[in-house]
Amino acid sequence: MPTLVLGATGKTGRRITARLSAAGHAVRAGARTPGPALPHVEPVHFDWYDAATYGPALDGVETVHVIPPAGRLDHAPHVAAFLEAARAAQVERVVLMTARGVDVSDEIPLRQNELALQATGLPHTIVRPSWFMQNFTEGAFVPGADGVVAAPAGDGPTPFVDAEDIADVAVAALTGDGHAGEVYELSGPEALTWAQAAEVLGARAGRPVRFVDADPDAWVAGAAGAGLPADYAGMMAQLFGAIRAGYEAPLSDGVRRALGREPRSLAAFAEREAALLRQAPAAVA
Image 1: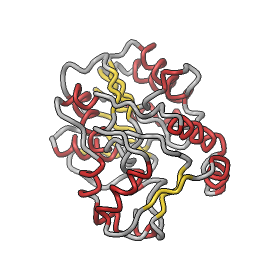
Image 2: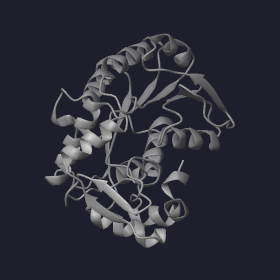
Image 3: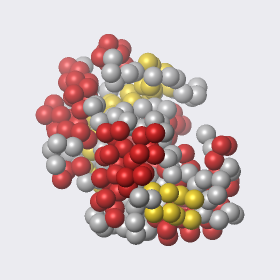
């Protein structure tokens, strides 16, 4: 029986899909638009905001990887409805990705997703990653043509985590034993300030990369002007406030607990992605 991977074309979803495909597992890849053709992978149209897509996506699946929609704060009722549909479809295992720190308040949408999953009674694993290293190569913080990474992070340390590690943990939880009921908080092996991270990236990129501490209000206005929903931009500013205050600095042992190895470092990530880091921003997919 197949595994349904939601958000199958995103940063983690496509890596999870590729790993399952390479291992010979049948995959149903749920997304609004299909990704590249892969062996054992069946694309299926899925839209969090169209409940009519839930049933066809869930039909006959055994396990599900849930990634809520990016850039939105209104997803909790839709995720809850989907999880209830998964329970009704007798799904045997769910892996849910949220984020570190969501358990500070039950009002946080990602925390509401966790509570909704727990309420179904389905066997499940929760994965809570820190900030993705891939934000520097395929996200909002790709160094500009001038090498600048601008964010309102101050000098707060962040233990950036590689999406490859997140995908490895997710696949282990989807296919292996001993992960039911676990909450895996994932971080890299060291907490770096964003200025230190820029130095690491620049040393491997072959071009100068430097961090500029952006004014929080100006950053929110710029992000909203670039198309990010205003409420989501405001939430991001709160996350950066937590970084500035040092709350994001502690390391997590989820990679070690789930996989029995240490997480990848930012230096190793930058070495692997050096060619991509060298490209001008317009050339980054």
